[in-house]
Every structure is written in C-alpha cells, then in structure tokens.
Length: 249
Length: 322
Ligand SMILES: Cc1cc2nc3c(=O)[nH]c(=O)nc-3n(C[C@H](O)[C@H](O)[C@H](O)COP(=O)(O)OP(=O)(O)OC[C@H]3O[C@@H](n4cnc5c(N)ncnc54)[C@H](O)[C@@H]3O)c2cc1C
Ligand SMILES: Nc1ncnc2c1ncn2[C@@H]1O[C@H](COP(=O)(O)O)[C@@H](O)[C@H]1O
Image (cartoon, rainbow over all chains, first blue to last red):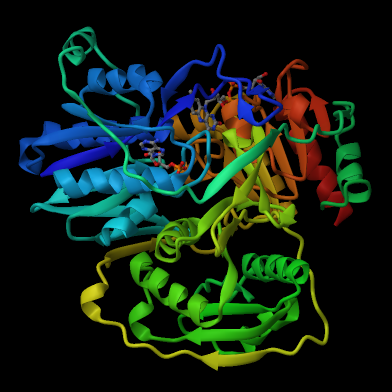
C-alpha cells in the first residue's frame, strides 16, 4: 500500500499577518514557514501506519504544490520520515487549481490512501481534499479522527454532529483528517535531517488549469470595543451587563 | 437563475443552522432579484419542510431515497449537482459544518464552481461576485472574487441572523432518483452519539475553561454556571490534552471553530491559536488573574481575579435572577 500525504506550507501560527501591494497580498517578509499543523499530524499518522509491518504500507510520499520557496518545508517533511516528495512547481493560490494538480500526480503514480488536512491555516478553505477525490472519482471521508488498516482495508473514524461514526471504504480513497488523527506531531531527529538531504524530491511542471477564485484585497478584522472591567468583588454586575447591556443571556 | 440551499436534517428535523442557511440564501436571492430553492435529502415530513418557507424558500425539492440515509458525500454531491442544474442555480449555499465541508468541494469540481468557504456576511458585490472570507485563522479577511458561472458559498455556523419572511408561499416537489448501490462506497460500521448535551457548535452561549482552572476537580462551578445559562462547555487545548475535559470540547485552531453570542473564557490566556477558534463570538468575557493576559484584548467584559472565587459568585448571581 502506498500513502500520499498532501502538505501545505503556511506561516507559523503565531505570525502577525501584514499586507503588501496595497493590501492585495500578504507581506512575506520575516514570516517563519511551517508545515500546516494538520498535515504534520497526518504525516505522523502515515508514518505510524508504516512503522507496523502488519499494515502493509510500503511507502509514504509527500506532495506539495508551491514554488521553490517552499523547499525547506518539503525537506522538513522528509526529515520527519517521508520516503520521498513531489513538488508541483506552481503558485498555489486557488484550491481548485491545487487539487487538479495533485489529482494528476495521483493519476500518474497511483496511491492507495491520499491524506489531506481538514483546513490549511492560511486559506482556511477546507476544500483541497474533497476536490482531489472528485477529480479522481474516488471516495473521500471527511473529519477523520482515526485511521487504521485492518485486513488490508482502511477503517476510519469520522466526526459527525454530536458523535462519531466508524466507516469502511475501499481504496483508493482520500482521508481528510482532523483532531485525533495523531497525538503529537513527530519531530525530525538528527539522523532524519541528515537523511533528508539525500531523499528524492521530484519536480513536476503544472498542468494548465484555470483557477476559479482570486483574492483581490485583504483587510484586518474589525477592531473590537475595549474591554469593560468589572470589580472582582462584585461579579454579579457582569450578569447584569450581559442581561441588560449586551442582551445575550 | 435561482439560489439553491442544501438543508441537512437530523433524524428528520431541522435546527437553527438550517434556518440560518435559508435566511442567508434569501438575502443573496434578494440581492440578485431571484428566488430560493431548498434541497432536503432524507426522510423529513411536510410540516417540517414547510418551516423552511418561513425563512424565504419558495420551493423545496425533497429527495427521500432510503439509500441516502448515511452521508456518502459522493452520492450527495451528485444529487445536489443534478438538482442545481435542473433549477438553473447560479449560487449554491451549504453549511460550513462537517457535512458541508465534505460535500461542497465535490460539488465544486462537478459544477466547475468556485467556492467561498466559511462566509459570514452577504456577498460584497455580485459583479464581480465578491465574498468576504475569513483567512489566516481569523487574523485577516479576504475579498475573494469567484470567477466561475456557478458560485458555491459555505456559511459559518451561528454567523447570520435568522430573518423570517411572513406570508411567503412555498411549494414542495418530490424528487425521485435511482441510486445505484455500487456507487455508495461509505459503509458505516458503528455509530456513537452523545445525547442530552448541547452541541458546542450549536450553542448560543459557551462557558470555557483553561489551564487556570488548575485541576480537573475544579470544574463543577463552571459546569453549573453553564447549565444555569443553557450553555455548552468548552476548553483550551492543554486542558483536553491533559484529559481534564473531553476532546470534543477543545476550541481553537486545531479544535472546534465556533461563533456563539457569548463566550466566557475562564483561566484561558488567549493564545492566537485559541482565539482562532472563538474570535467570531459576538461577546467574549474573560476571567483571569493576570491583568495583562491577551484574552482581555479580545474581550468586551473582563474580571481580573481568581476563577475559584468568582465562578461561585456568578452561579449565585444567575440563580438570583431566575
Ligand atoms: C500549532 C498549534 C496549534 C494550537 N492549537 C490550539 C487550539 O486549537 N486551542 C488552544 O486552546 N490552544 C492551542 N494551541 C496552544 C496555545 O498556543 C496555548 O498554549 C494554549 O491555548 C494555552 O492554554 P490556556 O490558556 O488554557 O493555558 P495558559 O496559557 O497556561 O493560561 C492559563 C491562564 O490562566 C490564568 N490563571 C491562572 N490561575 C488562575 C485563576 N486561579 N483564576 C483565573 N485565571 C487564572 C493565567 O493567568 C493564564 O492566563 C496550539 C499551539 C500550537 C503550536
Ligand atoms: N499547496 C498545497 N500543496 C499540497 N497540499 C495542499 C496545498 N494546499 C492545501 N493542501 C492540502 O489540503 C488541505 C486543506 O487545505 P485548504 O483546502 O486550503 O483548507 C491541507 O491541509 C493540505 O493537506
């Protein structure tokens, strides 16, 4: 069985976002780039599955659609333990475009389980995984909090409103993962970092695909009203304000 | 052209989320000078379906095929896209909840329709079609232009006010289709559902605790306050990681993203990753011993003090009001 893990390259989650070009783009100066947190966990789970020979996972490949600027993020994924990587050499500004590129990679190389995160922390799209599955005409399971392999078949737990469902789906499939998929992200050890340098990163040129969306301008969230402080000795006043001023209780 | 809205049901019933979606769809339809068609999949009786009419749906397409009882997003996307084409829909509206996140991207590829996901306001403009979209986990908002003929919008839960449209007339059309079982690929082996608990994503009020609660044994005044307020309970990530509270209560970037009317943060410092999940709340209350905690910058009401002393007093104050 071959697993493909989709990784997106995002600003570190504590980054203060600033804009450039008349607010038409995000100012990348000084940004620390990381693997999207969900993708780090999904890579961890893929490697855990490979660790146990009973699961029959032969390889874990990572794929990224992005420019040469995201090479360090790909190397990091290799250092954590991915066997090899594929980079589709293009700007990744639209989910439809990105998913079309990854679908093409899967068509050529054939993977059994394709893992995506539920959301990238920059675009907040929750789109790429589902789109890949539709491009390929294969099943997808979303909001996956556990992925196992039993008797050669994937068994997934997905979150539904107010509960969980365990579902079985035949391969190939796209698993769109969220909280629970792995406990802690696996970190690169020194040996992994050394080995990553020699692991193959295959460069693929993009297919021509028209993007369907475009950001024209960014803005900051509207500032919130300043905090009104209530005396710690008299918390009952808070209840009054919530009832009569904010009118929320 | 029409506006199509997919309204999920829960054991044959709609909930506030469904009416929010229809209210939003009506807002878009009004801007575009057109009408709203709602799609329902599963067994829902006519009285329940008619409720969608109260928020402006003028037509309801009801698909009641038994084989579609579990969410197979491939099958659902195929049904919805078929109806969208038949209804000549220019805009399709879906919730940004778990089911919506599974369906919308598939629909996008089928219809070659761009998606604006997690919107909370009406479109800024219809030509070019521009939506206001949360990005960078709430640290920035984008004006996103959708260039395709058909547009898909997924609406953030609890972000749009209900708008009733008295006197609206609404017809129900049954849509029958044959589902080829070979196409249903998701086999459900087991279901575990919590009952009797207010769902965090549905709740109007949420009381949430952080590491400042000190120990799992200190939670009773917090849960008591929540139950008096009819609120759901939540927590920060370290709290669920430590096993003090269940994982489904964890809010934030890597947990649930919610937008209640009121979020009471007790002993939570207000890290950006936590705020990413709650910053769309209409009102935030912070209770924290540290006056410099960043949560106070996000809050509209704050109490600087010890949660262990303040929570019992809040409980008393709410009881006194009843
Ligand atoms: C990639 C990534 C993703 C993350 N995702 C999330 C996420 O989704 N959600 C999340 O919550 N965190 C997330 N985090 C963790 C986040 O950075 C913070 O570490 C976390 O939110 C802190 O939790 P806390 O506020 O409960 O604890 P602390 O930061 O320890 O704060 C405890 C607060 O309690 C106050 N306090 C102490 N005693 C009392 C008392 N007696 N009464 C009142 N107040 C008191 C303190 O002043 C302090 O402000 C993420 C981190 C990373 C790196
Ligand atoms: N440029 C990209 N390259 C590879 N995978 C991506 C890219 N962008 C998004 N993804 C994957 O899609 C998931 C969801 O992203 P999004 O649809 O942008 O919220 C991410 O967690 C990644 O797994």
